[in-house]
Image (cartoon, rainbow, N blue to C red; front, side):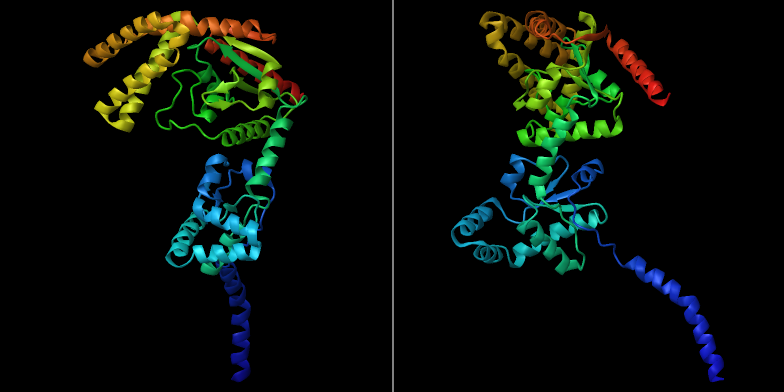
Length: 411
């Protein structure tokens, strides 16, 4: 009887053990290592929890990262001063004294929520991947038993990589860079979007003109965050369209977009681009675009954000401010004349919904301000014009060039 029972137990052991092992292994979390593979980190759009102080994050960040500081700005200042005067051990002790009890519990709770929302893809990040991120990592592990990975080298390491990567992306022998040019209102941004190009104005959160502020997010990113975003956009574009034969499109821009400077490497490369495709649209078509963008669609966006009445008022104020920014260029008398026409247009639009009077002051801005400025820039260019045509023609030309390039690469 006993031998038969043992035999039965042995058989059950053979059958059940693999199932138990499999079930237990599925309950055991995969330990992800810390990483310094910045390329994969960026191309995979890995969620980043940046534990630096708010002032550091505002000065420069990685697009898409989330800031949950382990130390406030004031706490960071105190700990930093202590570190300089008394060394690391004293600074750690001060940090522990500053962040304890309910304060620590609150910050840890925020860390744990991020980790729970991104269990298989996120990373911790501080400035150099040192004391603050390892402290956050330790808190999380003590709280949950899970070792959440961090970015080795931290923000500084990623920043250095992105600076070098932009130089590589724009170096001779990399993908062709073609600039999409055209007068204001020709729909360059629409063409860039259709071609899957790099929307520099979108990255800068500014439309690039005196009317360029975006109502949903009136504050542009920091210069460092913008440069990081530009480098990431090129990195992804070249990963999608690798050379030989790859081509990347960007909109023709001056040295600035709103308050932000284009990275010098990009400015130089755009000045010596592999060619320019120029969009040529008639005045009426351009006015259609501008009225739709800046009067109709932008007005609706203000109303969504601020409500109908306040939205209308803020949209009107936005247009007035844009015109005021170029008062000097227009001259006082001409500015006053166009401002009067704008007021009549706003009143007419509000009373009847008719936007036709807006075309009058917009047409004057094109012929007297934006077009002469564009002509001057084109005369100084010296870049080869690869194609001229209306917006749809430019898009079709680019699609044909891409198809021919693909055929050559597969021959």
